[in-house]
Each structure stands twice: as C-alpha cells, then as structure tokens.
Figure 1 (tube, rainbow, N blue to C red):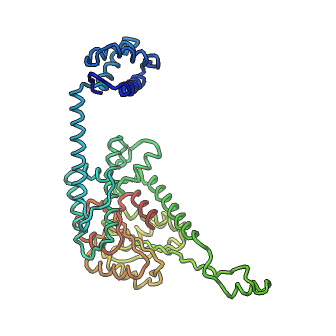
Figure 2: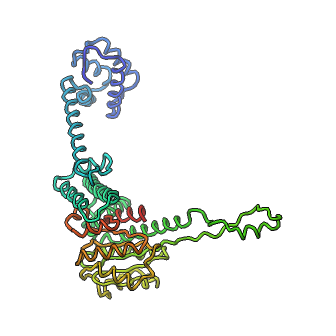
Figure 3: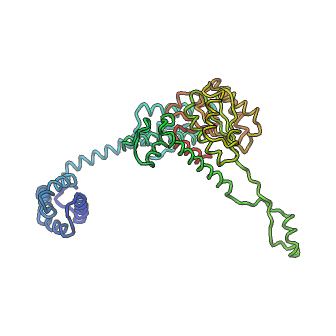
Length: 440
C-alpha cells in the first residue's frame, strides 16, 4: 500500500493482517499478540517516514535475526512507495487497455457473414496469444469458409465449433509445454497413467508411436463403450406408450358396464438409429485408418445396427467380418493385408455412388453416416454433387476430418464438403470423443 500522512485505521488493519499472513506463510511466528503490539507501535510514529514504519513493524513482528531478511523481502514487496505504487497501477492500466484492444481485434478478425463468432473470453485470449502466422491462417480459414459455395447462415455454429476446437488444442499444447509434460511423440514419456492418458487424448493421432499404441487402443475401447451406453440410454428414454387404443380400452372395460376406468395404448414404435461408418483408407489416411478400425471393432461389440465400409478409389464392405465376431487382429489383417484398396488413390464420389447403388437398404431416414476422411480426392466437384444426393437419402451425415484445423484452408475440398454436411476435426482422440459423444 502507498504510505500517506493519514491512513484510515480500518484500511491499515486490513493490510497489516494480509502482511502478517504472508509472514506466517514464510514460517515467521506472528500471532494476535504481535499484531496488537504492531498496531500500538504504529500509533507512536509518523506514517510519512517509510523507515520508521518498517522499524516499528520489524521490532514487533520479528523475533530472530534469521527472520529479518525474510521480513525485509516481504515488506519491500508488499508496502511499496507511493511513486512505485502509482507506476505499477499505470502499468496495470496499460496492460488492461492493451488486453481490451487485443480482444476487440480478435472479435473483428473472427467474423462470419458480418457477425462475430460466439467465443468466450478464454478463447478470445487464446486466439490473441497465437503467433501472427497462426492467426493469419485461422482468419483465412474463416474467410474461405464464408466465401464457399452454398454456405448458409446455419453453418456458423459448425464454424464456431471448429474454431473453438482448434483454440482448445492450442491451449492444451501450451499447458503441456508449461508443465513440462512428457513428450508422447518419442514413446519415452513417463508419469502417472492418468496424465499419460490425457496426453495421448490430446496428441495428434499421426504422432502416436508404436510404443503408445496399446494405451491408445484402450482409450478407443473406452470411447466405444461410452458411445454405446449413450445410444442405449437414448433408445430407452421417453414414453413407452404410443397413441390411445380405443378398441382395446372399450373391450377391457366391459366388466365395468362400459364405464372406462383403464385406458389402453398402442405399443410405441421405436425408431432404431442405424450407424454406417465409412472409413477412408487411401494413402494419405493410412495412419488414421488403423485407429478408426480399432474404434470400429470396439463399437460393433455393443452396437447392433452398425455397417462398416472402407474406401479409396473403390468400396469394400467390412460388415460381414464384424458380424462374424472377428477379433481385432483378423480385422486389421483383412483390411490392410488382403484389401485391394488399402493405400491407394482416393475417389470419394465414386465410393459414395457405389454405396448408394449396391447397398440401398442401408441408406434410409434412420441411418446416420459417419465419414472419416481428409477430403483429398480426385474430381472434387463431382464428389460434392454426389455427396449432396447421398445426404438427401439418409438421416444425417457427420464428416470427421483428421487434418489439423490450421491446414484446412490449404484444401479447397474441405470448404466445399463443409458447406454440404457437418464437418468436425478429429485429429486427436479427444476431438473424436467430443464429436461422437456430443453430437451423435
């Protein structure tokens, strides 16, 4: 506090109590008696003298020579001179003004069709802390998304989620660096199981090594079970009765002379959600595809209405292998070693067309299609038209893009696909969990 000639008594007591608390934290034995002695001694001095003020407190609060150095350090930090106090206050005011300008600029940078994206204070601050190159790439992504064909206003919520996810990823990286978290990219990280799992969840799937693969597989298995429980709860929730069955009600109440006491209802028809998983196994997706196959295998063990396909320039049906209860090793062997399309080129439009022509029974208003692909393909415009027709046949299409969000502006196909269907980032297990648990 700044020392002045007249200090309000209550203000002095509050600050003295805070000062005594700091001394106690450093191990000095300062109690109620010492506090009373200090207040009495301060009544005998001139507050305009900083030296007298310090001597009075030191004489009553310090009991040994070894504590004098600690006392002086805390005193100089807590009771700053008036000029230094004003200087600090000016610095704080300047920092607050600079922070407000940064937040205002962040809001101006991230706009969609003239409206600011709905980001909270922490997210705006995270954006402001990005490097100029990172901010520029994110701005380009927002602008290219806005300028895309058939981009309607409702796409704003998807764009907001994508930007939030990217900022959250940047923040988690900063926190890991500040904590000195183990580097999972070399597989030699140490630490508790929980912290390692957290690091794996936030690590780019492409950077997960063979040494960390067993732990990542366990995370995917838990995610599969969690998603299955969510789907089961939704099916069981809600009323079990359908519309009133008048005929059954009349017949059942004949014993009461036609007076209706008991109402009978028709059984409720339950609309079971069907999930169709479409996994890109082309050359640019090989590493991600193995993780999707792990997730696919775990999910099929608990979800009955699941169809699975892999594609690159053609399409392969993996549902039979899953329904045959193949173990994970057999499934990976089937997809990787014996597949004719693994690691090939990509023609997403052709794969969608083949799926619609050869498996029409699996595409209906109950089907939710999950596509895992980076959108890199030949014949992009043809693919977009095919995707639009495909979307109209099913209940919903969720597109999971494993490319890091900051790279999305580099590919025209990302913006075109994102304008037609929901697109979410899934470069980490945490992002995969966030989308599937929160949106499916």
